[in-house]
Each structure stands twice: as C-alpha cells, then as structure tokens.
Length: 228
Ligand SMILES: C[S@@+](CC[C@H](N)C(=O)[O-])C[C@H]1O[C@@H](n2cnc3c(N)ncnc32)[C@H](O)[C@@H]1O
Image 1: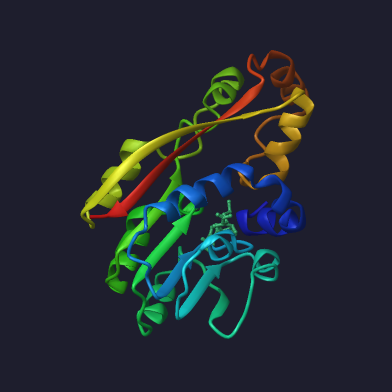
Image 2 (image 1 turned 120 degrees about the vertical axis):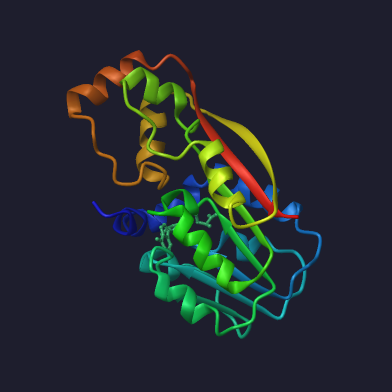
C-alpha cells in the first residue's frame, strides 16, 4: 500500500489515534516564540498544527498528499489546505512564489524519500524552520523482538542531513505509550498512521511478535529541530 493511501484509509479514525502526534505538536509549537504571521505546514494531515496555534496570524497554508486528511483540515479565509507532495521538487518551486515567515512540519518528514532533497526544496523558501521528525528509536523493542531493522532514519542521520543546509538546534525526545493489552497495542500501530505501508510480517509472525513483545508500551523517538 502506498503511504498516502494508508493515511487516507485511516483518516477518520486517525484523530482518536494521534495521542503522540498531539504531544509532539504542542512541544514543537511551544518553542516558536516569534509568533510568525504567514505559516506553511508540510504534511499538515487533518490540521493538528493549525488547530494548536494559539496566536493570531495572517495566513496558514497546510500541504499534504492524502486527500482524506486534507478534507478534515480546518479552512477559513486565512487558512488553506492544499494538495502537495514534498517529495516532488516542483512543489517547492510553486510554494516559493508565496511569502511565508515560518515553516513547520510535525510528524511527517520521516516519510521523505530523500530528506536532503526535501531540505534543498525548503531552503528555496528562505524561512526559519521548526521540524519534528520521528527517528529510528521509534518501535525500538518491537523491531528488535521481530528481528526487523528500523524503517526510519536515525536521529544522527536526520540531524546531519538538516544541518548541511540550516543552522539549527536539536533535541531528541523519547515517548512511551502504554496499553492495557498487546491486542490494543497492535491495533494502535495499524490505525495510527505510523506503520506506513510496512506489512512485512505474515499473520503467524505477527501472532508470535504479539506473544513475545516484552513491554506494555510502545516507544517513540522524535527529533525536534529549530532554526537558530
Ligand atoms: C503522522 S501524520 C502527521 C499529521 C500532522 N502534521 C500532525 O501532526 O498530526 C503524517 C502526515 O504526513 C503526510 N505525508 C506523508 N508523506 C507526505 C508527502 N510526501 N507529501 C505530503 N504529505 C505527506 C501524510 O499524508 C500525513 O497526513
């Protein structure tokens, strides 16, 4: 399954499954003290960033490639939600015609096919950045138990790729999400939009993993990156 369709499929349910993503948005926004007026949000989803901004601004542009998520995004005279794929360099050319004064991206850029190319695209916009990107410590014990290598870039690789093009400060944060049963935990993985098209385990392997997973929580690792 393509990543875009996985997010669209679960778009309705995603809202109730985005506990970690909401914590991430709150933390990301808490570090933006400049109250930017013209904001661009890459991988805006159903609008967690937009809905959490507590200052008045002139314009907010959310961009996402999952129509199902865009349909749920708030819209008003100063809020637009547009279709766009950040893996497509032409998108940045189009966006660079507008004037933004801050770029935010929360829980989305881990899915960049080529993060360095995305950074080059963002650089064209010439704006301060605030990014929260999930990294390879996410589902650490789950991956070890299943004998899988992490699907996400490491925090170091992510930091280095961004640092090549921006003066930044970084913070690595670990989250735990507890569950009352493994069944519930695996249901969460499927519905939260964090598994992203990775159906690598057979039914039997999944059952084995559910039996052997030693924790009652899932691990998440997020790197927070802000322009200096
Ligand atoms: C986990 S959600 C986060 C949504 C929102 N930013 C939040 O914090 O709740 C990741 C979002 O990134 C979007 N996304 C993933 N790859 C993308 C791409 N190449 N271009 C645009 N959006 C993308 C998905 O469609 C999804 O809405």
